[in-house]
Amino acid sequence: MRVTDTLSLAYRTVRSNPTRTGITVAIIAFGIMALVGINTAIDAMKQKFTESFSAMGANGFTIHNKKWFQFNNGGVKSQRKGLKERKSNANAPITKLQAETFKDRYVYPAAVSLGYTGATDAVVSLGDHKTNPNVRVLGGDENYVDLNGYSLAAGRNLNLLDVQSGRNVAIIGSTLAGRFFGKNPEMAIDKVVNINNLPFRVVGVLESKGSTLGMNNDNVVITSYNNVRRFFNANPNASFNIQVKVADVKLIDGAIDQAEGVFRPIRGMEVTEADNFNIDKSDSIVQILLRNLSVITIAALAIGIITLLGAAVGLMNIMLVAVTERTKEIGLVKAIGGRRRNIRHQFLLESVLISLIGAGFGIVLGVLVGNLFSMFLSTGFVVPWAWVLAGALLCSGVGLLAGLYPARKAGRLNPIEALRYE
Image (cartoon, rainbow, N blue to C red; front, side, top):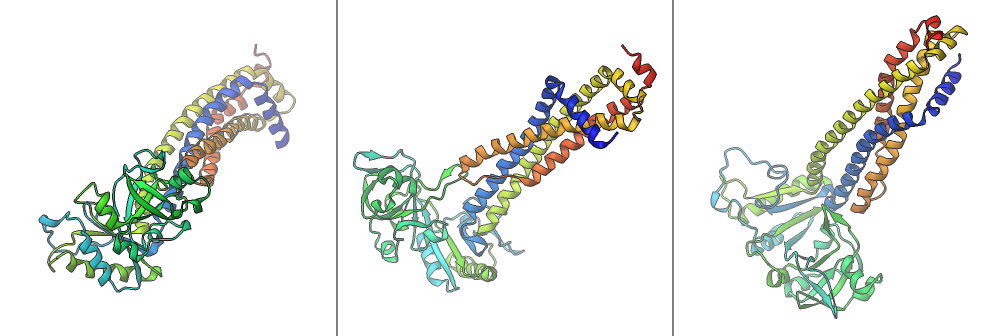
């Protein structure tokens, strides 16, 4: 009996038992759907993290106080041994004077931006139209837009005069521009909107940036940090963040060393004292988050394997029932010259075929379910090819293991006794 004949017979047998096959296929499909779906969603999250947090790329870093959300247990600069931490100012915020002094003294070939977060519940209005109290007001300078991964769809950026004079000008996000001015961002330029009942002239509109960790990056207003400190500062102890971006990634280590050397005296640090600020590379944030996602990947793999083990037991049971039901057929095949290996191959192929059909449905459903999450994050269509291949191989192994014992049992049947089986 040729392999093609065995495969054809196995396929016809699978089709002849649609209910039994369908139940087993469904169990396998759900296991693979969980595995592929969760990993599709994880790949979408990785893509979003990379887009959102690596806006400055590997050639940027951020200086912030230690009370701010920390990565890498204290930043890219490890504390030198023997230095003592002064408890009185360990979490002291970075003040406006300190941030501006750093910007003036830092002479390394790099762009420096000062950032200051204001209200997160601002209301923006234009005429009779107003937003919900969920608009974030961000304070920055002339480099803030570029160093935070934003780009302009219309209008201009903030300039040095805007920052120094503190005049009421602002750049609005695409969500706000769409709400008030429709699909034409140019219409927003030079219009006056009210932010918490304070008038601001719109000088620019941002391109859409999407969401990060559930936070809408387009529902924002960017104005000078001086304006934020005057009008939108809910926390008097809020700290400035300093972002630095060099032109070449080869300069990043030297830029970090110089930044630390410049900022320590500004923060009033003695030679024997440990830094009371952190320095984080832009891409290190992404790497930490991606490593944390590995826990979810392991959980998805465990869920998939447990489900597939259950499916393997069910498939083995079905194949054993099939051996019993087709005992007479097996005896007839052997009586006309069929060999043990032909019988074994047929039952193994049936088992693997059912598993692969389940894998096919599970992979398709998993990719679709995972990309529903991808749509929520506003990322592109994601196909985790490595996990698709792993799922197919895993199901092939399940089919082989589940069909091995029934196939051996069928191959060992005595043809005479099998023909007399009722």
